[in-house]
Amino acid sequence: MYRETKWQDEIVDSETKELIQDGTDQSAGNFNNAEHGISDAHLAALIMFSGMLPQIRANTVEKKTVTLTNTKRVPFNNSKKSVALAETRDSLNYDVEVEVVEIAGTGIVGEFDITDKMLNGFKIAYSGSASSVTVNLTIKGGSN
Image 1 (cartoon, rainbow, N blue to C red):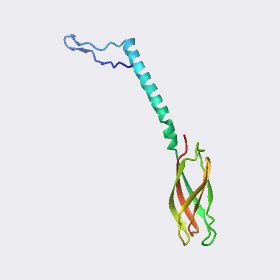
Image 2: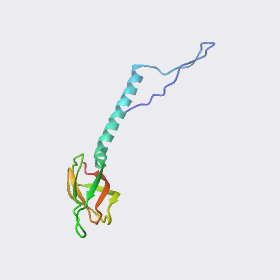
Image 3: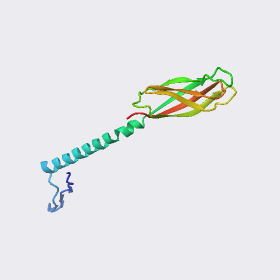
Image 4: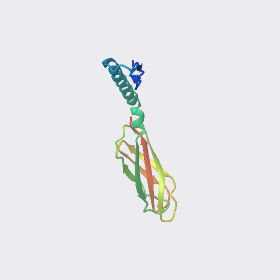
């Protein structure tokens, strides 16, 4: 366990050269105590970080911009598109957030459907009648 050292400067009267305060001994014992404290703090940080690693990986975030196109007429829609992930996930327990950036053509976007989740990708489609929709995707989690 680290034992804190109270360091003090040596103070000498400049005129009389009289010692007013002894300074802390700069010895191997004091310096080794500091080294042990640094080592203990480093080890504690590593232990704490390794315990947080699963949580950090679970919060892995990937962003993509994708354009989906629909060439069919209402009520049909063929906008389903595969999206590859840059980082393979450890589980299918990841979320995909969708933000519409642009809508082309007349019609509506409707709902988004995320299907066929895999460790390295998924499929996305919209249900509306717009001819194309550009979306920003934020993929979160899925890593242990």
